[in-house]
Image (tube, rainbow, N blue to C red; front, side):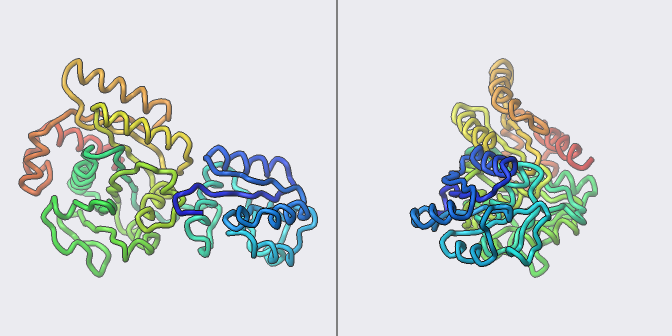
Amino acid sequence: MSDLELPTVITAIADAETESFIAGTLFAQGWSVVFRAIDFDCLENYVMANPDIAHGAILIFAPDLPGLTKELVGEIALHVKQLVGFSDGAARENDLGELHPIPTSATDLISLVRGFVRAPMVRQSAQTPRQARRARVLAIGSAGSNTGCTTLAINIAMELSVLEKSTLLIDANFRAPSIAALLAIRNVNSETGWRTIAPSLSITEIIQEQAMSVDSLMEQASKSFDCVIIDLGSISGLSNRLTDRRWTSTMTTWCCDHGDELMVVARPDLLGMHRLEQVSQLIEKTSIRSALSFTLNMRSQGRKGADEEARFLALTTPLRPLSVRVIARDLRAASTAEREKSTLIEVNERSGLRKAIAKIASEIER
Protein backbone atom coordinates (compact mmCIF):
# COMPACT_ATOMS: atom_id res chain seq x y z
CA MET A 1 0.00 0.00 0.00
CA SER A 2 1.52 3.29 -1.04
CA ASP A 3 1.49 6.31 1.20
CA LEU A 4 -1.07 7.98 -1.04
CA GLU A 5 -3.61 5.16 -1.13
CA LEU A 6 -6.53 5.04 1.26
CA PRO A 7 -6.18 2.15 3.73
CA THR A 8 -7.41 -1.38 3.19
CA VAL A 9 -9.32 -2.81 6.16
CA ILE A 10 -10.33 -6.25 7.40
CA THR A 11 -12.76 -6.49 10.31
CA ALA A 12 -12.98 -9.40 12.75
CA ILE A 13 -15.74 -8.48 15.20
CA ALA A 14 -18.67 -10.67 16.20
CA ASP A 15 -20.98 -7.99 17.60
CA ALA A 16 -23.02 -6.91 14.58
CA GLU A 17 -23.74 -3.38 15.80
CA THR A 18 -20.11 -2.60 16.59
CA GLU A 19 -18.82 -4.16 13.38
CA SER A 20 -21.39 -2.32 11.29
CA PHE A 21 -20.47 1.00 12.91
CA ILE A 22 -16.74 0.50 12.30
CA ALA A 23 -16.96 -0.96 8.79
CA GLY A 24 -19.66 1.47 7.68
CA THR A 25 -17.84 4.53 9.00
CA LEU A 26 -14.54 3.62 7.36
CA PHE A 27 -16.25 2.67 4.10
CA ALA A 28 -18.02 6.05 4.06
CA GLN A 29 -14.58 7.68 4.21
CA GLY A 30 -13.62 5.90 1.01
CA TRP A 31 -11.56 3.21 2.72
CA SER A 32 -11.66 -0.28 1.25
CA VAL A 33 -13.24 -2.79 3.66
CA VAL A 34 -12.23 -5.97 1.84
CA PHE A 35 -13.37 -8.65 4.29
CA ARG A 36 -15.62 -8.93 7.36
CA ALA A 37 -14.83 -12.09 9.31
CA ILE A 38 -17.43 -13.68 11.61
CA ASP A 39 -15.03 -16.12 13.33
CA PHE A 40 -11.30 -16.84 13.44
CA ASP A 41 -11.37 -19.75 10.99
CA CYS A 42 -13.06 -17.52 8.43
CA LEU A 43 -10.46 -14.80 9.04
CA GLU A 44 -7.51 -17.18 8.79
CA ASN A 45 -8.79 -18.73 5.56
CA TYR A 46 -9.16 -15.31 3.91
CA VAL A 47 -5.75 -14.04 5.05
CA MET A 48 -3.94 -17.16 3.90
CA ALA A 49 -5.75 -17.23 0.56
CA ASN A 50 -5.10 -13.54 -0.15
CA PRO A 51 -1.57 -12.78 1.12
CA ASP A 52 -1.00 -9.76 -1.12
CA ILE A 53 -4.14 -8.00 0.11
CA ALA A 54 -3.71 -9.03 3.75
CA HIS A 55 -0.09 -7.87 3.89
CA GLY A 56 -1.16 -4.28 3.21
CA ALA A 57 -4.31 -4.32 5.34
CA ILE A 58 -5.24 -3.08 8.80
CA LEU A 59 -7.00 -5.78 10.80
CA ILE A 60 -9.56 -4.36 13.22
CA PHE A 61 -10.63 -6.99 15.74
CA ALA A 62 -12.49 -7.46 19.00
CA PRO A 63 -12.10 -10.18 21.66
CA ASP A 64 -15.65 -11.41 21.03
CA LEU A 65 -14.58 -13.04 17.75
CA PRO A 66 -15.24 -16.82 18.12
CA GLY A 67 -12.04 -18.86 18.25
CA LEU A 68 -9.75 -15.90 18.94
CA THR A 69 -6.88 -16.44 21.41
CA LYS A 70 -3.73 -14.56 22.36
CA GLU A 71 -1.60 -17.03 20.42
CA LEU A 72 -3.74 -16.74 17.29
CA VAL A 73 -3.64 -12.95 17.45
CA GLY A 74 0.15 -13.14 17.45
CA GLU A 75 0.08 -15.54 14.53
CA ILE A 76 -2.28 -13.48 12.37
CA ALA A 77 -0.29 -10.31 13.12
CA LEU A 78 2.54 -11.72 10.99
CA HIS A 79 0.31 -11.67 7.91
CA VAL A 80 -1.26 -8.19 8.11
CA LYS A 81 0.13 -4.68 8.09
CA GLN A 82 -1.29 -3.56 11.44
CA LEU A 83 -3.60 -4.74 14.22
CA VAL A 84 -6.09 -2.48 15.98
CA GLY A 85 -8.09 -4.03 18.81
CA PHE A 86 -11.29 -2.67 20.34
CA SER A 87 -13.04 -3.82 23.49
CA ASP A 88 -16.08 -2.81 25.51
CA GLY A 89 -14.04 -3.48 28.66
CA ALA A 90 -14.84 -7.17 29.08
CA ALA A 91 -11.33 -8.30 28.08
CA ARG A 92 -8.17 -7.54 30.04
CA GLU A 93 -5.32 -5.76 28.27
CA ASN A 94 -2.85 -8.59 28.87
CA ASP A 95 -5.08 -11.20 27.23
CA LEU A 96 -4.94 -9.94 23.67
CA GLY A 97 -2.55 -7.03 23.87
CA GLU A 98 -3.59 -3.41 24.19
CA LEU A 99 -7.27 -2.94 23.39
CA HIS A 100 -8.90 0.44 22.88
CA PRO A 101 -12.36 1.44 24.08
CA ILE A 102 -14.87 1.37 21.25
CA PRO A 103 -15.09 4.96 19.96
CA THR A 104 -18.36 6.74 20.59
CA SER A 105 -18.32 8.79 17.40
CA ALA A 106 -17.29 8.38 13.80
CA THR A 107 -14.78 11.21 14.09
CA ASP A 108 -12.99 9.58 17.04
CA LEU A 109 -12.88 6.23 15.25
CA ILE A 110 -11.42 7.68 12.08
CA SER A 111 -8.90 9.83 13.95
CA LEU A 112 -7.60 6.81 15.88
CA VAL A 113 -7.34 4.47 12.89
CA ARG A 114 -5.70 7.20 10.80
CA GLY A 115 -3.09 7.46 13.53
CA PHE A 116 -2.18 3.80 13.11
CA VAL A 117 -1.90 4.25 9.34
CA ARG A 118 0.48 7.19 9.71
CA ALA A 119 2.59 5.84 12.58
CA PRO A 120 1.87 2.16 13.24
CA MET A 121 4.53 1.81 15.95
CA VAL A 122 3.26 4.75 17.98
CA ARG A 123 0.68 4.05 20.64
CA GLN A 124 -2.60 5.80 19.84
CA SER A 125 -5.51 6.61 22.11
CA ALA A 126 -9.13 6.48 21.02
CA GLN A 127 -9.57 10.08 22.05
CA THR A 128 -6.98 12.83 22.27
CA PRO A 129 -8.27 15.31 24.87
CA ARG A 130 -7.21 18.93 24.55
CA GLN A 131 -5.95 18.78 28.08
CA ALA A 132 -4.26 21.68 29.80
CA ARG A 133 -4.60 23.78 26.66
CA ARG A 134 -4.32 27.49 27.08
CA ALA A 135 -4.26 28.45 23.43
CA ARG A 136 -6.97 28.67 20.83
CA VAL A 137 -5.55 27.07 17.68
CA LEU A 138 -6.58 28.37 14.26
CA ALA A 139 -5.21 26.63 11.16
CA ILE A 140 -5.57 28.41 7.82
CA GLY A 141 -5.53 26.37 4.63
CA SER A 142 -5.78 27.41 1.01
CA ALA A 143 -8.26 25.98 -1.49
CA GLY A 144 -5.96 26.35 -4.46
CA SER A 145 -3.21 28.90 -4.95
CA ASN A 146 -2.83 32.65 -4.48
CA THR A 147 -5.81 32.90 -2.13
CA GLY A 148 -4.11 35.24 0.36
CA CYS A 149 -3.91 32.50 2.96
CA THR A 150 -0.48 33.62 4.22
CA THR A 151 -1.49 37.30 4.31
CA LEU A 152 -4.47 36.36 6.47
CA ALA A 153 -2.35 34.25 8.81
CA ILE A 154 0.24 37.00 9.31
CA ASN A 155 -2.26 39.75 9.93
CA ILE A 156 -4.67 37.75 12.11
CA ALA A 157 -1.69 36.90 14.31
CA MET A 158 -0.64 40.55 14.42
CA GLU A 159 -4.15 41.74 15.28
CA LEU A 160 -4.40 39.22 18.11
CA SER A 161 -1.11 40.47 19.52
CA VAL A 162 -2.45 44.03 19.38
CA LEU A 163 -5.39 42.77 21.45
CA GLU A 164 -2.74 41.72 23.99
CA LYS A 165 -3.17 38.03 23.29
CA SER A 166 0.17 36.25 23.32
CA THR A 167 0.25 34.72 19.87
CA LEU A 168 2.44 32.23 18.01
CA LEU A 169 2.45 32.34 14.20
CA ILE A 170 3.56 29.07 12.59
CA ASP A 171 4.61 28.72 8.97
CA ALA A 172 3.69 25.12 8.14
CA ASN A 173 3.52 25.60 4.38
CA PHE A 174 6.15 22.97 3.63
CA ARG A 175 5.96 23.41 -0.12
CA ALA A 176 6.48 27.16 -0.13
CA PRO A 177 7.26 28.72 3.28
CA SER A 178 7.02 32.49 2.92
CA ILE A 179 6.18 34.21 6.21
CA ALA A 180 9.81 34.91 7.10
CA ALA A 181 10.46 36.39 3.66
CA LEU A 182 7.33 38.53 3.70
CA LEU A 183 8.29 39.99 7.08
CA ALA A 184 12.04 40.15 6.37
CA ILE A 185 12.90 37.94 9.35
CA ARG A 186 16.01 35.80 9.54
CA ASN A 187 16.73 32.88 11.84
CA VAL A 188 13.07 32.20 12.51
CA ASN A 189 13.73 29.07 14.55
CA SER A 190 15.49 29.34 17.88
CA GLU A 191 16.50 26.93 20.62
CA THR A 192 13.25 27.68 22.47
CA GLY A 193 11.19 26.65 19.46
CA TRP A 194 10.06 30.13 18.37
CA ARG A 195 11.30 33.68 18.07
CA THR A 196 9.65 36.83 19.44
CA ILE A 197 9.27 39.47 16.71
CA ALA A 198 6.90 41.97 18.37
CA PRO A 199 5.18 42.51 21.72
CA SER A 200 2.96 39.45 22.30
CA LEU A 201 3.88 37.97 18.90
CA SER A 202 6.26 35.10 18.14
CA ILE A 203 6.99 33.12 14.99
CA THR A 204 8.34 29.73 14.02
CA GLU A 205 8.66 27.68 10.85
CA ILE A 206 8.24 23.91 10.63
CA ILE A 207 11.05 22.25 8.68
CA GLN A 208 11.65 18.59 7.93
CA GLU A 209 13.87 18.06 10.98
CA GLN A 210 11.03 19.26 13.23
CA ALA A 211 8.17 17.49 11.51
CA MET A 212 8.41 14.35 13.61
CA SER A 213 8.27 16.36 16.84
CA VAL A 214 5.17 18.37 15.96
CA ASP A 215 3.19 16.85 18.84
CA SER A 216 5.66 18.03 21.47
CA LEU A 217 6.03 21.46 19.84
CA MET A 218 2.27 21.98 19.76
CA GLU A 219 1.84 20.73 23.30
CA GLN A 220 4.37 23.30 24.48
CA ALA A 221 2.89 26.07 22.31
CA SER A 222 -0.66 25.32 23.44
CA LYS A 223 0.37 25.84 27.04
CA SER A 224 2.53 28.91 26.41
CA PHE A 225 0.33 31.12 24.21
CA ASP A 226 -3.21 32.44 24.16
CA CYS A 227 -3.53 31.90 20.41
CA VAL A 228 -1.69 29.83 17.81
CA ILE A 229 -2.16 30.70 14.11
CA ILE A 230 -0.93 28.15 11.58
CA ASP A 231 -0.41 28.76 7.86
CA LEU A 232 -0.86 25.36 6.20
CA GLY A 233 -0.69 26.51 2.58
CA SER A 234 -2.66 24.39 0.12
CA ILE A 235 -4.87 21.65 1.55
CA SER A 236 -5.75 20.03 -1.77
CA GLY A 237 -5.85 16.25 -1.52
CA LEU A 238 -6.79 16.53 2.16
CA SER A 239 -8.08 12.99 2.66
CA ASN A 240 -4.88 11.42 1.32
CA ARG A 241 -2.71 13.74 3.41
CA LEU A 242 -4.48 12.62 6.57
CA THR A 243 -3.42 9.03 6.02
CA ASP A 244 0.00 9.31 4.43
CA ARG A 245 3.17 9.25 6.53
CA ARG A 246 5.26 11.86 4.76
CA TRP A 247 6.68 14.64 6.88
CA THR A 248 4.86 17.23 4.77
CA SER A 249 1.51 16.01 6.11
CA THR A 250 2.23 16.02 9.84
CA MET A 251 1.02 19.54 10.60
CA THR A 252 -2.14 19.25 8.50
CA THR A 253 -3.00 16.05 10.31
CA TRP A 254 -2.35 17.59 13.72
CA CYS A 255 -4.57 20.56 12.91
CA CYS A 256 -7.47 18.41 11.69
CA ASP A 257 -7.30 16.17 14.75
CA HIS A 258 -6.50 18.74 17.44
CA GLY A 259 -7.07 22.28 16.16
CA ASP A 260 -9.99 24.43 17.29
CA GLU A 261 -10.76 25.76 13.82
CA LEU A 262 -9.67 24.99 10.26
CA MET A 263 -10.27 28.05 8.05
CA VAL A 264 -10.37 27.28 4.33
CA VAL A 265 -9.58 30.33 2.19
CA ALA A 266 -10.71 30.65 -1.43
CA ARG A 267 -10.52 33.31 -4.11
CA PRO A 268 -13.62 34.24 -6.17
CA ASP A 269 -12.49 33.69 -9.77
CA LEU A 270 -13.42 30.70 -11.89
CA LEU A 271 -10.41 28.59 -10.98
CA GLY A 272 -10.68 29.60 -7.31
CA MET A 273 -14.28 28.37 -7.12
CA HIS A 274 -13.32 25.19 -8.94
CA ARG A 275 -10.60 24.48 -6.36
CA LEU A 276 -13.01 25.30 -3.53
CA GLU A 277 -15.54 22.86 -4.93
CA GLN A 278 -12.89 20.13 -5.04
CA VAL A 279 -11.79 20.80 -1.47
CA SER A 280 -15.40 20.96 -0.25
CA GLN A 281 -16.16 17.58 -1.80
CA LEU A 282 -13.15 16.08 -0.03
CA ILE A 283 -14.08 17.63 3.31
CA GLU A 284 -17.64 16.36 2.99
CA LYS A 285 -16.26 12.81 2.88
CA THR A 286 -13.55 13.30 5.50
CA SER A 287 -14.18 13.40 9.24
CA ILE A 288 -12.08 15.92 11.14
CA ARG A 289 -12.31 17.01 14.77
CA SER A 290 -11.47 20.62 14.12
CA ALA A 291 -14.39 23.00 13.55
CA LEU A 292 -14.60 24.15 9.95
CA SER A 293 -14.91 27.67 8.55
CA PHE A 294 -14.62 29.25 5.10
CA THR A 295 -13.34 32.65 3.98
CA LEU A 296 -13.86 34.16 0.55
CA ASN A 297 -10.95 36.53 0.01
CA MET A 298 -10.67 39.29 -2.61
CA ARG A 299 -14.41 39.65 -3.28
CA SER A 300 -15.15 42.07 -6.10
CA GLN A 301 -17.30 45.19 -5.72
CA GLY A 302 -20.88 45.61 -6.87
CA ARG A 303 -23.02 43.05 -8.65
CA LYS A 304 -20.03 40.97 -9.69
CA GLY A 305 -19.06 40.60 -6.04
CA ALA A 306 -22.62 39.63 -5.10
CA ASP A 307 -22.54 36.85 -7.71
CA GLU A 308 -19.15 35.66 -6.42
CA GLU A 309 -20.47 35.55 -2.87
CA ALA A 310 -23.59 33.65 -3.92
CA ARG A 311 -21.47 30.93 -5.60
CA PHE A 312 -19.22 30.79 -2.54
CA LEU A 313 -22.16 30.36 -0.15
CA ALA A 314 -23.73 27.70 -2.36
CA LEU A 315 -20.56 25.61 -2.08
CA THR A 316 -19.86 26.09 1.61
CA THR A 317 -23.12 26.35 3.57
CA PRO A 318 -24.13 22.69 2.95
CA LEU A 319 -21.09 21.71 5.07
CA ARG A 320 -22.53 23.63 8.05
CA PRO A 321 -19.35 25.50 8.88
CA LEU A 322 -18.67 27.26 12.15
CA SER A 323 -18.56 30.54 10.23
CA VAL A 324 -18.48 31.89 6.68
CA ARG A 325 -16.52 35.10 6.12
CA VAL A 326 -16.14 37.41 3.13
CA ILE A 327 -13.29 39.90 2.63
CA ALA A 328 -13.41 42.53 -0.10
CA ARG A 329 -10.56 42.97 -2.55
CA ASP A 330 -7.99 45.55 -1.42
CA LEU A 331 -4.94 45.11 -3.61
CA ARG A 332 -3.46 48.48 -2.67
CA ALA A 333 -3.20 47.67 1.04
CA ALA A 334 -1.97 44.12 0.41
CA SER A 335 0.64 45.28 -2.13
CA THR A 336 1.90 48.04 0.17
CA ALA A 337 2.34 45.63 3.06
CA GLU A 338 4.19 43.19 0.83
CA ARG A 339 6.43 45.88 -0.61
CA GLU A 340 7.31 47.25 2.82
CA LYS A 341 7.62 43.74 4.32
CA SER A 342 5.23 44.65 7.07
CA THR A 343 1.71 44.01 8.39
CA LEU A 344 -1.43 45.87 7.39
CA ILE A 345 -1.84 47.67 10.70
CA GLU A 346 1.65 49.10 10.29
CA VAL A 347 1.19 50.40 6.75
CA ASN A 348 -2.47 51.49 6.75
CA GLU A 349 -4.56 50.72 9.79
CA ARG A 350 -7.63 52.36 8.21
CA SER A 351 -7.70 50.16 5.11
CA GLY A 352 -10.74 47.99 4.51
CA LEU A 353 -8.61 44.86 4.42
CA ARG A 354 -7.01 45.61 7.77
CA LYS A 355 -10.43 46.29 9.35
CA ALA A 356 -11.86 43.04 8.00
CA ILE A 357 -8.98 41.01 9.40
CA ALA A 358 -9.16 42.86 12.74
CA LYS A 359 -12.80 41.80 12.95
CA ILE A 360 -11.83 38.14 12.41
CA ALA A 361 -9.21 38.44 15.15
CA SER A 362 -11.74 39.88 17.57
CA GLU A 363 -14.03 36.90 16.90
CA ILE A 364 -11.20 34.46 17.55
CA GLU A 365 -10.05 36.00 20.82
CA ARG A 366 -13.49 35.83 22.44
